[in-house]
Structure formats: C-alpha cells, structure tokens
Image 1 (cartoon, protein in one colour):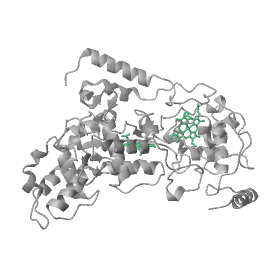
Image 2 (image 1 turned 90 degrees about the vertical axis):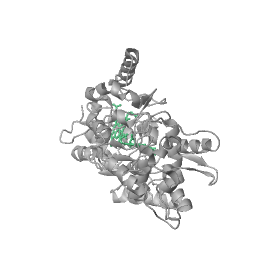
Image 3 (image 1 turned 135 degrees about the vertical axis):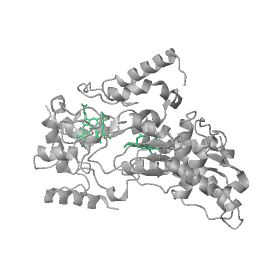
Image 4 (image 1 turned 180 degrees about the vertical axis):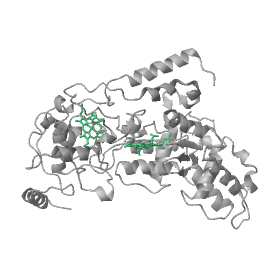
Length: 294
Length: 149
C-alpha cells in the first residue's frame, strides 16, 4: 500500500502524542485531581508502538479508527494474512461444503438460489441491514437462517453452531478488504442509538462500560491483553485464547463476563443493537474476516 | 428485599461478629475531605495478605490495571498508574477512599469501587449484593499500599 511521507509523519506524530502523556487521562474527568503527580512510566512498550507506523498497517487505519489488527502482535498479524496459517480458513472451507449441500423440504442448497459463492462478493459490507418484511434489522447470521427457513424449508442453525459460524465466515470473507458501509438512516438510527446507550452504560460488579476499556485505554495493557478500539470488522474471528472461531456476540458476552455483569443470549436484540452501533462506529474499516486475535 | 430495620440489624450483626465478609452489606463509612480516615474494621490491616489480594485474580486483581513490585506475577497492567511509591504520595485515609469508591474522586474512572454493592447495574447473579473486597480485605490492601514508599 503506497503511503506518502507526510502521512507517515502525521501518523508518527499522532502516536507520540497519544503515548507520551504521563498518566492515564480519563476523558471527561473533572472532579478532584490527584493530590500528587502520577508516575511518568510509559504506557506502552516501545516495541509495540514501533510497528504502528508501519505502512503495512495503513489499510487498517481510517482516520482515528484502528482495527484490532493494528494492536495485534506482528506474529498474530502474519498468521491472519497467510491463508494457509490462518486457522479461520478451515471454517471458510467448511462453509464452501455447506454452500452446495441440499437440505430441507424444498430440496435446495444456497447455490440453488445464489449460484457460486462469489455472487456474495460485497454483500456483507451493508450488514446489519434493515429488513422491512420483518420490521427489524438482520445480521448476516439471521439472514442465513431466514434463507434456510423461508427458501429451503430447513431448520435454522443455532447461534455459535459450527455450521452458522462457517457460513457467516464464508460470506463475510467474500467482502474481505472492502469497507464496512452499513446504512444509517430510517429505522436503523434507532438501533444505532440503542446500541450506543448500551456501549456507554456501566455494568456489573466492576461497574464499567465498554468505553472505559475501548475508548479511554486502547493500546494499553490490561494484564496480558492489549486493549483495542473494539471494532467489529474482523468477525467471526479466530481467537488463540478460544482455540477456535467465535462470533461477535460471543466476544460481547466475554466482555460482559469480565465486568461480572449479566449477559444476554447470543443473537439477542441487545447484542444486535451493539453490533449495529459498533458497525456504524467502525464505518470505513475493511472487512477482515476471518481475522486472528490473541 | 430488606427493610431499613433489617439492614440496620445486618450492620449491627456484622459489627458484633467482627467478621465482615464480602457477602454482607457494606458497613457505613465516612468520607472526610478526600479520604476515609476511620478504618473499616477493628483489626489492623495485614500487609502481607494485602499484597496477595492485590495480585490475586479472585481478590482485588489490581495487577489487571496497575504495575506493583510483585515480580513473581507476570503481565502487570498499564491502564492505571504504577503503584510503586503510592504510600508516599497518599496517606492511609486517601488510599482507603481510592479502594472503597474511587468514583467519589473521579466520577468517570474505570477503576471499580471495591467496597460498594449499591447502585450497580445488571450484576451477574453470583456477585449480586456483594462488595468485591470485604472490610478487612480493604484494610489489608491499604496496609500493603502504605508499605509502597
């Protein structure tokens, strides 16, 4: 990806500005200041900061938005980039097998209606999408199940089932590299606002909101994890910690569990609303499915 | 749901038994200036136990966000300030308020209140109605922080 010197310098300046500040500056903090200065310890290892100005990361940075890819270790990024090493591609292959599998009372497969899977190129960038006939937004997962039930007369797949993960991964992979560009008008506005309210709501015994980790402290270490900006462009994602592929809703569940908060069922309106808000918030970042994360 | 009388009785029972566990409703405490000057329990804090609580994931898990001179634990967090020297920067009363409820000082902070069970939202069932640390555990953590000169 070609990148001008000016852009590189601006980027380096931004990195320095972000990471040279002495203490954690909590956004919107007014109240009483600490009576004594906070340690000037750098908040990020120089080793981590350095690759951020690597031109190879440019496609994963859109204005101030940085994909989780930017915060991942170089070896994790290398794994994502290599289709042989990226374990997520096993799900893509599984999805290909399912694409042509005839199921249900109508005797059809996905291919019966859609032809080759390449016909899905560019489709995922506009999801979640408003579906007037259902009077609700649908995620890629829900659209797949809609096709299964309505067009194939087959059973819907359960959220987080190997089949639904494989098919979602296959379909999103057809849009790899294309910017997320969900519609944000009409009834979608309401869902964006609903997700936003959830994003900023303090939850659980630890009494945190999403923004406390992902807006206030991206790039900083929470134990062994480097916090990212919580973008959704890489899902379903292969997490080394899970030793498997998981949906965005599973990740959201994990984040709520970390706060010792109640969780919602996968596929619930709460997670759909968060997905819609986060998709709007990450607008323009390229789809990376299947991404690899720690 | 407990009425006011039942809550008071619970507080009295905790006081009498002298063994406040995190399962109990938190004791009332008083904020003076930027601190809580009166210890939460009658037993002085045990710094050694406090150190273990700071490190333990099931205890305070302070290392998730802070670095501290606890070399046997790897991966200290960097989200909050380094705790080294914190015992010279603050007095015990100030440190106690930081641990009990840092939102009194910084309403927008990410740091959890370790001795608050009220006013929280959608707490997962196993933790509902409980503070993260007990009164004695808060004292132990404060005693440890005071050794970080």
